[in-house]
Image 1 (cartoon, one colour):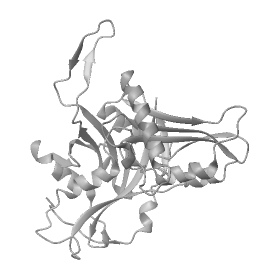
Image 2 (image 1 turned 90 degrees about the horizontal axis):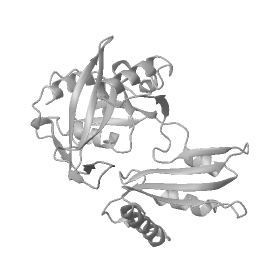
Image 3 (image 1 turned 90 degrees about the vertical axis):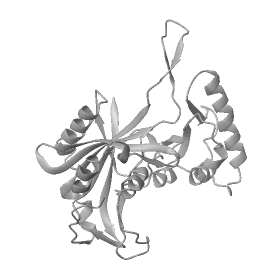
Image 4 (image 1 turned 180 degrees about the horizontal axis):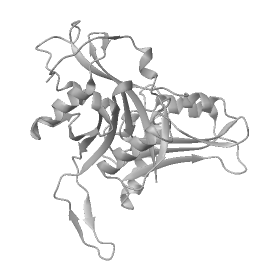
Length: 315
């Protein structure tokens, strides 16, 4: 099984200035809070950092387990019977992050269900004690999580010969799917209605994932490039309801190329994993980052001018 790794620089900022504050110190202070004190409700969903571990070979590196607590609880059952029972315990959707202190870098083990990097930024900032300062004050402290960029996937699509397939994968939800599409987009009602119809089919078959798939037939013209680009530009790809938008194109070398737009333009790598526990994943990411991958994005932080700050306790 493969897991995608995404990369982010993380800094404590003072007003508009980026500081060299040692982020590991904040994570250590945070995990020492009580369990209930680490909970934060963001957009009506609860989040909590459940564990922070040291990298035994690199003193200031930290590896942490950031968890989303689902509001709705699924059922458990047995494939050999028709019995179903609700899950009584909280259902947790976690994301593992490895913090590389020397590069102010977060390596994220991406998944479609766990908290995003935007949620992590909000979460960390909830704990900073700014002593009543307003956000526009030059001394206001806040964390910034900055994506490490790569090739713009939309540019790869524009340069392709044609689009042969589009697959919009989204969560089955009671949400209004029209909110995932810009209100000024001409075909917003058509796309939203199509997603709603697919949702009904998914619910009928007991699936919690819907797919709106558009394909080029063998003897038909390819998907209209301009219409497809307009659709992609008007989708809210940062919304957690959209799991991915996968686009298959015929590239300039006449080869099929599969493109994911969910994390468009972000640097990523893939590693092979055989487990999903926190200790397994943090170890696998660490081993691959320092080994086969050759420490990608390790120099991204040098582009930022940092001022010296060494706060003892920000909580």
